[in-house]
Length: 375
Ligand code: TV7
Ligand code: CA
Ligand code: ZN
Image (cartoon, rainbow, N blue to C red; front, side, top):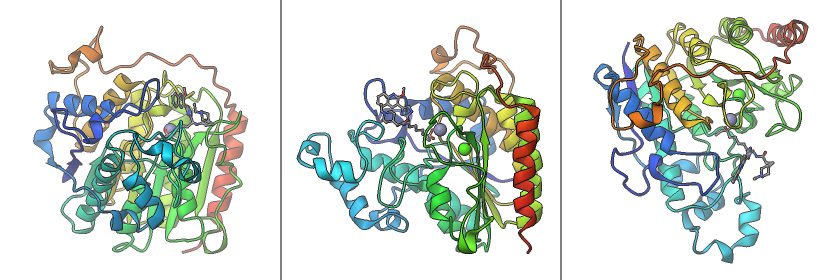
């Protein structure tokens, strides 16, 4: 198995690298988690088992393959110093508290989007079987606006690239939030099937992702939503995931898979409300790898950054068929992983509100919709 990793940040703090930007005080999104992930990957010597590339910075015209030119140009132009002159545009493009304007914002977008585009191109050219971009996975961004910490939708851009070589692409999203931007981009087509597992209800962001949202027109039955309640645990989640994804792959027969691995579905996440362990989360990655289809893996959410780095390092290992010893090897970032320096994260203690009957209803509903597809 040939695995490629996009390196989106330097080990030094070069301004504008994806790992060194700062969303602002108290903002939950901490790109520094990318540096932490990379140091863990290096400390476990995983770089020796794969190729590591520095992605190109996506050009504005590449970003405009999905986004409107005026939105891309605005992101390019706006800076923290000039934003007070553009209050109408800021509102129009939904820039503000969740999606602040910060230093090197556009370069950050170019780097994480460039990583996902490069990953898709390498898969298309058979240069690897699995391509990873932990800086990508910003699934909420819309054609003409930012949303939920996401400015450019790298996943949509990566899928558009894969569609140049594959008739059907499967998108799977295990971030705790609904993958609304990717779903919306492909809501009317049968060439992309989107499947999102997420918390739904109690006004949880973004508020969409009901099981009844299934796509429209040509796209009817090609959007799948698995709405979950607080506190879901490893055994219920992985069982549901495997049942649904096996049936999806069997029915849809995709030529390539894009897997968004948002780590905010882990127990103890600052914004999430699930009880998944890293083993449970990684089990989903292992399961998807087993289909042996061209696989593009991205990051996404994840707000307890020591856990995010642990999770993505373990998943890099899974994709390389390498089990990581529990004790974290010495590295420049070791201080973040104390006091125990282990890969395990504390168990979640959120009450599991997903009853057996609730989960079985959701599962039946999804499987019934899948039966309406015939290839
Ligand atoms: C993919 N939740 C992204 C997930 C995006 C979630 C939200 C915050 C938040 C923003 C802050 C902040 C926060 C502690 C948490 C309705 C609102 C409520 C802004 C304060 N602290 C992903 C987006 C979600 C910003 N947004 O899927 C600055 O929490 O719920 C909302 C919207 C309006 C705006 N306010 C929050 O994981 C990457 N935001 C502190 C400072
Ligand atoms: Ca999701
Ligand atoms: Zn999320």
